[in-house]
Length: 409
Length: 144
Ligand SMILES: Cc1ncc(COP(=O)(O)O)c(C=O)c1O
Image 1 (spheres, protein in one colour):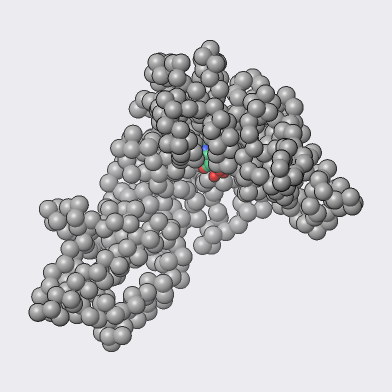
Image 2 (cartoon, each protein chain N blue to C red):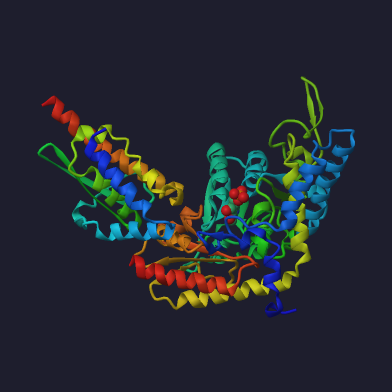
């Protein structure tokens, strides 16, 4: 099957929200980098859980609890297969990417990073992959170093290599930039880091919806991602960690489920991954997340990737013809995102105009303020795509942008 | 509340009632923004900049014959439109009337539901700044 055979109309029928009208116009949803829409199967899964087998898990002796526990635990295996982890024990359920990164910074970081040590992140990180490391560095007297990028929004690999030294203790890097669309060469970065014995966390929040992610092939030490950006519900996500590292790490939060035995003198902890899952987990959303993974797994990944590439090339070509428009982030390897500014026009004004047409985009800094500072701009207009978007929708966007320029210039 | 302020607010609310669609409201605000008198660049200083707005907003005032006249500008045409609405209500009013006015008429135009939180925070910051100016003039007048 080639990208042109890809039946996007039939795919769109799986997503009820996409047939909605806003302000009497067909919704055109180009804010997928913020959150993706959900297929009916995911919505049904939530409803089914709450109507048929809602129960607390891992604790009950009764039928419902057993059923819910099994469904919940199954998702761990689904995630394991989805990212090709060695075992499902390496899959920790968290609230999302943000919590995954915070968990590593708090637990691994507090234990292993000391005064004078260096932590590396890139110039295009999301705030959630900046602030946890700043908090850690502040607490420990460690130093946060930034891997620079070029004008296209690509990491400068030689500069990255120069930053590596005996004090470098951790690297945390984004796989696909949410504001620029850059796909970073994380495999190459990880290989280089491992020459120095430095562990690497990959922020895969944007990557999981677009690329086939393989943690063993990448050889990353940690990876964090969110369910809601890959067709699943909000409120859950994954921290993947290599078994050896997770076992060495102290718990992140204390509570039920994460313990083996509690007395007032001494508490012993449960095994990985439960050690990191204190309290009643987000059972419903994890189960529905499983339905999202099933949905994604049933798609032909190669077809999706080439269709999305086609969309991205098309929108890039179309927008490039507008002379008042400048694309921000022109890396050779890109996925899912086109960010741009309009000469002399406030980005939010343009975004609001597109909204009047029923086109959903995002404007501003996209939680990557340092990257915006690098380009010396206050923010961009960002259209972000998923396989359910169409060329017709892109045509509407391009027309909308042209009208916005006429109106606002 | 001062009747003049109340009347102008009601006029604006009635104007917006003429529009059924968000698109029409948007274009109306943009049109107001385009018509807002241009502020001299020398007045666009850091000290005239309002904190708390995502877009840049500058504001100054003149005080003549006991009445306040605001002048303001922004890099956003939509924000300029909001400024124009605020000025319609507040320019030429007495400080004490501005201080006392609730100035929540924009809620009743139906615009608020379409304004992102960062921008509505900015709107609140503008209103607050206008009230602070008014309070300043009021206190000055009382101590004289
Ligand atoms: C690259 C990247 N990292 C991290 C995050 C944070 O994800 P979440 O808010 O789901 O925790 C996002 C979400 O916008 C993102 O795009």
